[in-house]
Structure formats: C-alpha cells, structure tokens
Image 1 (cartoon, rainbow, N blue to C red):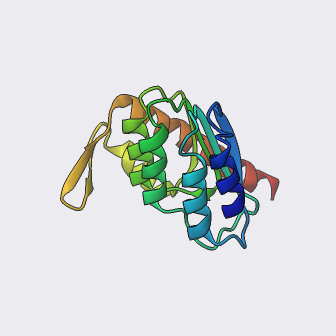
Image 2: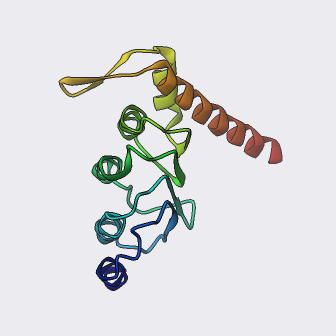
Length: 161
C-alpha cells in the first residue's frame, strides 16, 4: 500500500475524493496501514469515511491517535463516519462527535459497558485523565443510536441460536 499511496499522491489522484470505503485484513500490519491511510487520504476532501475489518477479529485495535488524525484532517466535512467489525473507544467516539460538526451518521462498535456509562449520565463530563469532554445531547443521541443497533444485533444473535 505504501507504493500505491506514493503514486496517488504524486498524481494528486484523491483531490476530489469525497467518499472512501477501506478494509483492514486480519494479517495487515496495522501501524503501517494507519500511516499509509493517513498519508493517502491527506489531500482528499472526504465527506464519507467507512472502514471495516474483513473478519470479526482484528489482532490489534486501531488507535485513538489514528481517529484523531482523521478527524483533524476531515472532521469539518465528514457527514458519515462508519466503522464496522472493529471496536472504537468511547474517547474516540466523543472526539468524533465533538469535532465533526456536520456529522449526520455515525456507525461504530463499542463496548456495551462504555455505552451504558455514557448514556446513564447525559449530558455529562467524561473524565479522561485530568481533562473532561462535554457531551451534548446530539452526542448522546448518536451514542443512543449506536447502542440500540448494538443491542438489536445482540438480541437477534441470541434469537438465532
């Protein structure tokens, strides 16, 4: 992917790219993938970002730092942020919600306990070391949509057994 990234940047291939869907394979060296994707998308005016794992198990988690970089580069335009088949931290979700001002759709997988904690105290300050993040009702609504989807999927899985 490093070579592909170099060619695309050299030809300014993504200067009009508004939407991208990327896959992460289980055997992918994640640190290299995150670096290449960040560089690849650096010139794209993205509005829709969709990333999914090709299996339900990913050896490593995509770091919060990667999501922060993506939001810094594209947050002002992102309307849809969709992460499937991989977990994302509550801190990353909060960052996405607070800095993507035109966000219309958020699809994520998060730990149920994290979502319950976030939903039990809305709108509240979530403690992160010595800092806090203010959650708006819009953030809580997005988390609630995510929670409902997560619980619905869990319920359907249990019913199919």
